[in-house]
Image 1 (cartoon, helix red, strand yellow):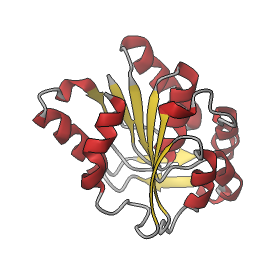
Image 2 (tube, helix red, strand yellow):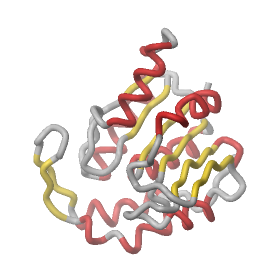
Image 3 (cartoon, one colour):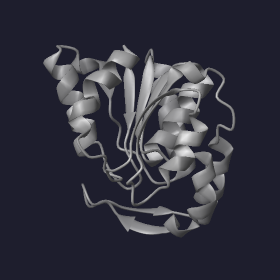
Length: 186
């Protein structure tokens, strides 16, 4: 089973998540991916993922943006593979205090809050050292207008990397990378 973790204030209906699901459906293995709707609260996200891990045999994670941060933590913790799409990395956290606040999800309209406590708790899930760098695959577009992906390139320098100079935070032409993602994970 693969777990796909969407970005901050996104949902399981995000375009990248659905493209991954469609790819696996087309291969006849659409039941091999879990795409949970993540709350904003750090501890609630971690608890949800731990439950999914306890109930399934996990072979890897895919994460976009903040989902990449959590995916890296879990892939590292459980020694499985992880793919990160324009991810948040540890070095981004100091500049992200501005995400504290209340939000309405732009996909499903649900309201949720990310507190200062949630922000501080993110630090507990940092991965300053990758125990098996070969288990990690970074997809980065340096044109990301939200996160400085040079920090991600630095973190994953010993891992598999697919980087382009242009692009954006959404990750332009993501559909062109899907086969490469699942070749790495499966």
